[in-house]
Image 1 (cartoon, rainbow over the protein chains, first blue to last red):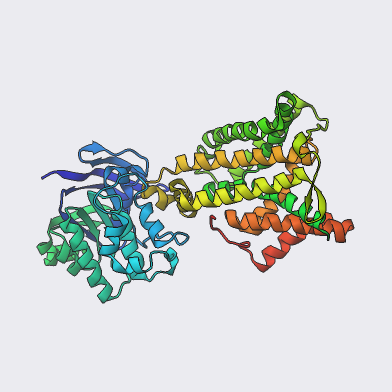
Image 2 (cartoon, each protein chain N blue to C red; image 1 turned 90 degrees about the vertical axis):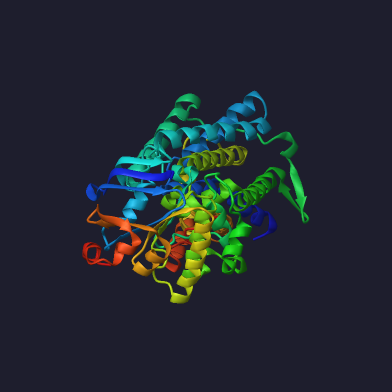
Length: 230
Length: 284
């Protein structure tokens, strides 16, 4: 199977404070990987390190080729992110926020229209400013924006955080459609149920290192639970 | 206040609008005040003098903004991009130094005498506006500012680059991870901002005198406009510029002895009433 994204011995720091200490992981074409761990384990930093947000050393490869240090490169190479706290632009409309996802110039299967079919709530408020949306709608918008660049790998940082169960169910349905389209997912999640429902494999982080990995069925094992304490 | 005085206020406000739009755009994206903006305006006025002497005012109206765009690009590549991770105070001081260098270089080239720039002959006389004879050249300033304002807002609202500018002005980091080359966007914005400063300088040349202190005196007014409009907001700056032009003119008419204080009083009043300015930090 083709490896789409690979991190090799990645160390990342903010203002000299080491947050990731030699993280290595890979994502294959079409698979979903759950990235789990306690708060502060380095999950968000692992995703952001791909975009050069913290200072990073080590190797990050997309389809076997090294990624440069410029933060705008991953989107053009087929790696998109749905960041934690959504980061919706409040000064732009729903449609403009989605169009922004195609800023790298990379386009493919997803268009504004097909994304509105995937998230009908967004279609109904397409001219509303980003800050006039509910938390669930903002999350849907962040996912739609990430898909606009037709990513091969979509990184999702705690997409269900703070959402009502009914909205989470809607999101899971949408993520299954995205999986079926062949897009690989990296899912940072606190909810084991969510990871087990969507991912086939997990990578567990602890104190900036990979402490366990395997099939998601093993997430319930006592050893893994003690390591990651979800 | 009669119609002629109202139009004077609009003409002055129009100049401030052209100048402050560029400053607001640069602040919105790079997050620093470009203290060299007055010097760029001054350079535009001196280039207007030079080009008008050699060819025509109309050639100056095209050439000076283009040359200033090149100067803006050099400032972006040489200063803003290199210092983007430094503190605002450091970058502000560097830009203050750049202003002094530009202004001193202008004096070395053109001297410190006041220089005349004649309005084009077609606009040398007056035009009838609702029964009032009014200098045609000042109507040109109002017209150019109106066209610039509409074009700028449409560009920001409708174009792909405008969308990227609005996004990057709000959140640079998120714009980057979505695939926007923020440095390229900034190059466009700083070059355009400098070109607008040059355009304002050319338009101001026949209106005011062209002299070495012109950059510093207008910079203070433009800073007041940008702060009162809502730092980083182009729409707010446009509204504040027109309002300040009209208020300043009304002050000159009604309370001439203290009119010089009017802009500062306006700035204090706006900041007390609405600390984030008329529009807060939004672009267009």
